[in-house]
Image (cartoon, rainbow, N blue to C red; front, side, top):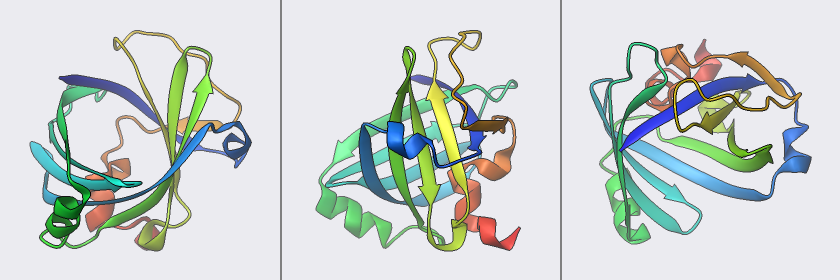
Length: 155
């Protein structure tokens, strides 16, 4: 139940031609405090409820619990969420032995594209594609919970 991931800005749209999967995502937060975020997500035709804990000192790992819920329930829960529902398209791209999840944001976060890669350990190495830009793993501004309250277009 520990998520280990690194997060990067994306420097070009080249990832789109390499993507093997694409989904639209709407997500909101019932709680966006860093110690415990509670997220409601609709990804394609599925709903999810996710609870995340605070990040480790390195910023690479944190507790994560996620359960699939009926999409109709997720739609109702989104209505209860804090202001600032996130709207994005997620592209999945296989690079070497890893899958990068690349999120292209829309709405108030338009212009932001972020890639994440999940790892088995904080020291695991991975192949970095050419379209990967600056690492922002430790920059809380790029967490979705932060973006829901402080949209990218307002920076």
